[in-house]
Every structure is written in C-alpha cells, then in structure tokens.
Length: 436
Image (cartoon, rainbow, N blue to C red; front, top):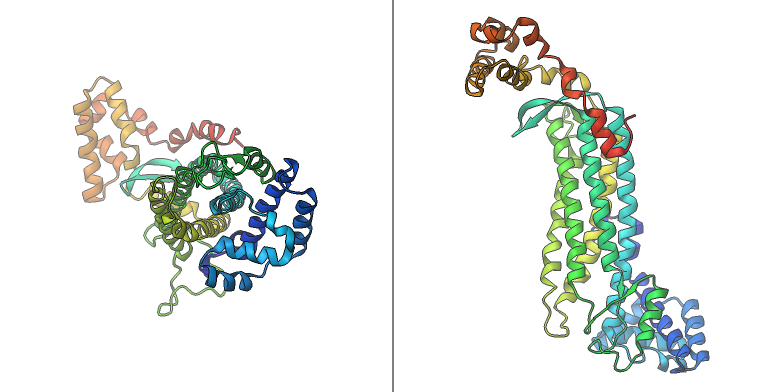
C-alpha cells in the first residue's frame, strides 16, 4: 500500500491490529461453541473473551515470536496465551491455521467490499446529479474518435451511471460469494472439531459456512472477487479516458476542476493538464493486474498448499485500497467537472452539418431512391465538406439529383438537432426511473 493512494478507513481494514483482533474473535467464538458442546469449560471461554477483549495485542511481540517459530498463527496463539493464562490451552481446539487465516481474510474482504460499495454509492449520486444537470446539453457523439451524430452530455453521464450501477450489483454478488467461513480442521473433514462450531462462528462473524473447505476455502471465490474489482477499475478507466479526451485542447468540451494555486507544469505556466484522470487510468491498470494472480491461486495442490498466501498478503490490501482511492477520486472529478456547452455546440458544427447525413440518407431511400444511390449522393456532398470546407446543407440544395427526390423544405428539416434528442427522456427513465 502506497500512502499517496490510500485512505485511512480502508488501510485500517488491513492493519496488523485489525487482523489480530479478527483472529482473536474467530478463536473466541469457536471457544463459545466448544463450551456449549461441553468440549471445554464455560469458565474458560468466558475468561478468554474477558482477557482478550481487554488486551491490546502487541504486534512487535508477535513478530518477535514469529521470528523464532517461523509460523504466524502459532506466534499469535503464544502471545494470546501470555494474555489469557492457563485457559489458553483450550484455544484452537481441533482447528488448523487456515481456519483462522481464511476466515479472517474473508472478513477483511467483506469489510473492504462494504467500503467500496459506499464509494460506488457516492459516485452514482454524483453521476446522477450531473446527468440531470446536462440532460439536454447537446454534444457530438463520436465513433472511432470521429464525429458521428448528436447526443447529449447527460446521456454520456447516464451511460456511466448505468455502468457503475452494474459494477455495484457485481460487487454485491462478489461480496456474498466471498463471505464464507471455514472451521473444519486439518483437511476439512471436521475430524477433531464439530461442524456446529463452524456454524456458530460463521453466524457470529456474519458469514456463511463453507460447504466444502478441504484445508482452505476454495480460491475460485477469491478469483471472482478480484476479477470484479478489475472490472470496476476498467469502468473507472473508461470514464477517466472520456474526460481526458474531452479535455484535449482541440476539443475542450469538459475539463477537470483547476483549483486556485494549482500548477499544471513546472516548465509551462499555461498548462491545465488532466492529471487526476491520468492518475485514475494508471491506478485502474494496477487493480486489474491483481485479478490474474487471484485466478492463478485457484489451482492449489491437493487439499492445500501455501502458494496463494504470499499473493493474497499483497493483493488483498493493494487492490482494495487502490480501488477505494480511485473511486473517491473519480467522484471528485465528476462532482467538480467543468462543462462547456458552447464549445460542445461549436465542435458539433465544425463540419457544417455533416452530422445530419444519416437523416438525409434515410429520407432519400424513403423517397424511392435505392440505398446504394442514396449513399452515393449523400457521400459525394459530404466529401466536399471534408475536403473543401463546404456547407453540407448548401451542397445538398445545389445537387439536382438530391432535390429531384426531396423538396427543399424536407432537406432543411433533416438538420433539426432536436430530432436527435427526442428519446433522451426514455433513456433517463430506463436508467434512473425518472425523466427530471
């Protein structure tokens, strides 16, 4: 985790202190279940909770023990015994290290998912507000980077809203899939611990019992979780790239907010660069990169190996912390985005009516001209606009083949911008459930 791209609440999910507190809670809840089953004394379970809750786990002490034992869970259990006293002998009865490690990891991932869902809610709110603000702001739609037909800036933002709403739904599903618990012993057979202990711990930790856990929780769950984060990151990049394109000097239809005192370049004082969205593009690349090792973690040897462990120690914190930062940064970009409707309209008109070519094409076909001939007539006039800086409407009206098929009033009618926005309300109704 790099502090520059980290927010405290998400960082705290992955702190050593948080991890050891979760480890303790898993062990203590297991002791409660063991006490209910008569396996350990109820007084021991009570003492473990009381002394553990009152303690602050010493990270340095655990690290020192681990340097000798070369085993992180044993180091923690040794330190817990120093805190609890003789009753600590009842801790970890019938359990294996992965019961603690995997259950804890899934708790952390669900906590991280909750923060990311809140981030998405903030982004969705910003997108909805700006979409309605610019519902009817005419702009040019582009395909291949080239002018296509008119749309509105609100529709662009509605597209982003719908995309991030899908991202949210995917994350809800990924959270549910990752929220499982394993307290099943050495190879997952419950040979030395009752399945009811797992059920108790799962309920207490707001998880579901893993149906079959060998010695580890199956990593296909984690692969889907990190793949989902990668998809969300890709959506972040898509919107960031759109803003970057719109901010180019030659376009300048929208740009990131440039705050008082901000500097764009150490060499060129005039610069106002899209630094936030460029940063988001880079952060998205990093989040996506964590999905592949998560998928490679699925194929472990037999009931388990630990080839996944080092990977998850890195990708768990890094992917969630980075995406958390990126989503909040993107929300700020959307919230403060500077939008220039006049420039949008000027750009739309740059090629003097070419954006209406399809309407003329369709009108000719409906007037009885073959599609091939209609295309030829429209294209030859359009090329004069491209190559000779002509006006499209003027060229059409001067083309006798076109006017032989269409009266002047009908040709002029095909240049009405409002035609292209007549169904914006339908799109907004589909996306937001309302039109204004």
